Length: 427
Picture 1 (tube, rainbow, N blue to C red):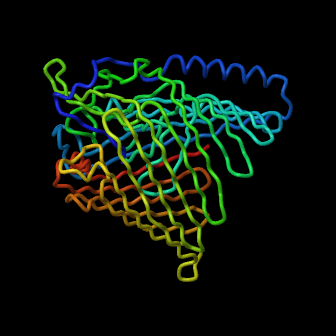
Picture 2 (picture 1 turned 120 degrees about the horizontal axis):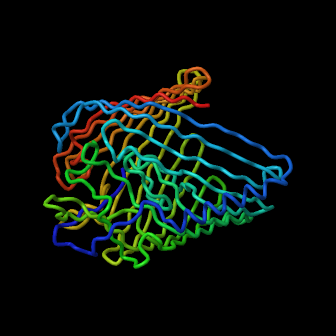
Picture 3 (picture 1 turned 180 degrees about the horizontal axis):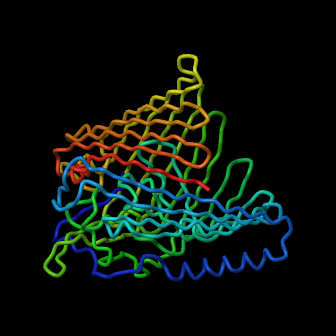
């Protein structure tokens, strides 16, 4: 689940100011980069072209009426498309990838949106790579929360769990050494988080205003962020550590009056964050650990996510594997007398089981349960998927929420229990 912070009416950290969804400077640079890669490829040998993608329909059914808008229907349908164009040349040393995304939702106008997930050029040397454009970069090893994943902004209208990300403008130099892989990032431009609209579900009681945005930095969404990461495998251990300096991806949400109505203003401060992720593979066990330290002008805090996954291979002498997962989260912001709304998982435990049938249809099932040990809040999820034929995939997700503590983030979606079915065609 993604993290936001909601502040009181009198917590006015910055002046109201709207901003565009994507940095024009970053997009101009990306367009120029794409044009340059096309020109370079005119004389290239051994060019390789691939066009693929997916088209899908999605149906959500909510078991209860909307908590904040009783006029909302129980049903919410949408369609989406995500094509991908890959162009490689120079025996794969140079490549260009374009992956746009578009969703049309029948109810929520904010969920009807488009994004460029990737528009990038990559050149590979003997022991280094340069990657530039719009890309997605994922860090992390744990299952239920990705503390260390900091580069890309959350696409909050896609789902509430924070798994979907917006494309991020970047220049990334990756260098391979005997003592590890070093990645340097220059991030010229910032993307604001997307939120469900007034007619949407899985949202806070007050609508987030996408035009009421302010920043700590005078450069606003044009601030240039930087990051550096080192990753290495040492025996049974995969370890990574990084430093990030730039605009906080988690906004502070402040209630304000606009035209006589209360909305949530987004405020993005500057932060420095260091993180460590560690995974040990020992026989059938995966031991996982993530921790971060984040410093901002307003507060500093530590957070951790740790646990294990044990896989029983070939259960009942079949081809199926069953995994058992347990993780615990801790956030220092939850230790005070007053609940900090920014601490989503201040003291929570997660239990889960994963079934992989290992059949030709790639049948998989994940079931999980989470409990807040400080508040009366629980959630349950099921994620199941299976391929049909060579080109179709069906998915079924079920989410159930229970909370009686207003400070817990699940409280705002406690009436949004739902079942979601998705049918995708891959080409």
